[in-house]
Length: 111
Length: 111
Image 1 (cartoon, rainbow over the protein chains, first blue to last red):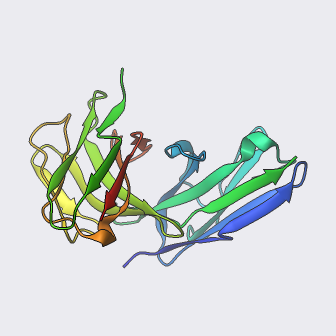
Image 2 (image 1 turned 120 degrees about the horizontal axis):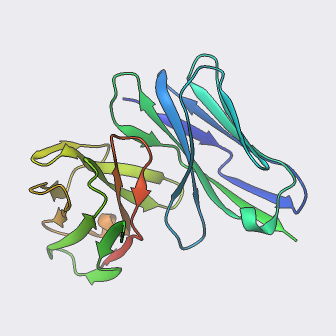
């Protein structure tokens, strides 16, 4: 079945450093979504990418969808302590099937 | 709007007991889903529904039952709880499978 792999599992950075998490799917995706979960909280939607090669920005966050629509990345520039949390990607296959989440990347930021 | 609500917030069960996790949404969303979250495993889809009267299995459906008699409610039933079902359970809803709105979660411990 469809699998979505996300790396790294953990990332510890100094405040001000950049951070990137990568997401890879075993199948071609119709779209990919990104979510953020603060410690003790629930996942909150960040963005959805639909088009091949799409790049979207939200302030210091940059999201990319690969040309083959099988991979995606989230890049945070100059991390802040407010960026702490777990970032999940979630992909839906081309058959409009289930939304499958990656394992998540837990980001910690040292002030 | 209350969004997605889940009850209870915490629950402790003994092996073999049954219980129902409640989930309700007031956004008139067609899609509803149940996920479980375990350390290092991300969010795994248990069951989902694309509308009242329609349910389907996700990645890890064994040991869980669902029904969808109304648009608003999507309860998750554990018929005979096992320690392997100790987890945090999230319910989510979406308009047509796009942005997922998550509830606050239920933390379940099975002894």
